[in-house]
Length: 305
Image 1: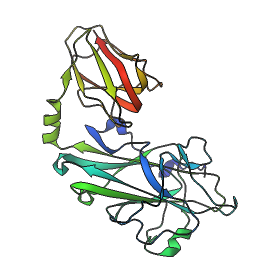
Image 2: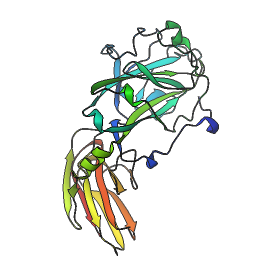
Image 3: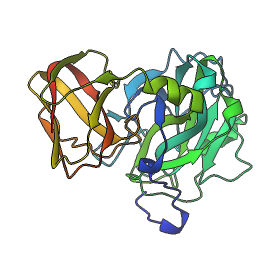
């Protein structure tokens, strides 16, 4: 439903996050349920078996022509299925690494998010919406958001567990004849102080004029981190990727580890030929890594100053 209510917008610019890392990336794979009949009442619990649900990659939905996975709304466009359900798991290798966890969500119209079976966040749904009741499969959202804008909100660290975690989301329509529905979600976190200090020692030095050839066969994942130590008095810093196959995104950040949640420069033009130029760069450490939009191979990373 294309309604704009800027006063209710919860969006926070994630570029201002500090040392953000990801547990779930945007455009990730989820299991989903879009049938007219309600799912089992324990669909949101940690140990629920959703193996019979369909599988696809976000963004999910219909009506916007920007979906990676188009979901179904039933046979009657004037009386569409009101709620669609999404699940996946994610793994935390070291819980002590995590500082402040955050949800980033793109949703239209309303949603409730459960982590390990406990509610973590809701938007545009009344407080008494209870997914242990079958009647909630017919509950309408109370309002709508800008469906192409991400929101970022913190959530309770205590919901997370060492090892495997589950996340379950119910997305509700504002009306039975709504023209569209949208869903994508990511989880990021700021590194605990000790982890920041440890990670900064695990970077690879990239000197001026040096070229690294990178291959990353896992989609939606990051390459190694490369550090550029820029002295005073440099007039121009150029960082570029070229050649190879697939689709790599170039991420650059001064004095921090870049990610999809935090970067100073990210051309994101598709393919592997991307260039970033800093005029009169401030002295210090610039950090660079690539993100695999699609698996890539033999991509050349070069920096010069």
